[in-house]
Length: 149
Image (tube, rainbow, N blue to C red):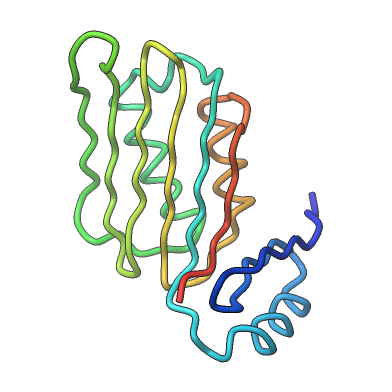
């Protein structure tokens, strides 16, 4: 699915760009960013996720495969841990990649997930969303794509 272009201004006259059209994206970046891009940051808040978020093995599979799907290079092994007390029990996954990191927090009680993918190398945020939905279901309540720089 092709998503529309959405632009968000910031104090430093930088923009966030949301489009699958590489040509439009390049033009907007060239005009507005003055080659000051440091990285790309996808932030997802997801609710109503399935029980796979409570499995260390399934979360580890998700993060390992995500690295491949967005064409990144892992730096070491992922760290996937289940911990917490009471209502705060859940799984946190951290995968360093050669160009930054993938971090996810999943909570058992609420069935929610909080996912951050940050990379100096461009990636397709739709691939992240599709793979996350395939593994965990859920509804995206907050989606932000930031160009950092």
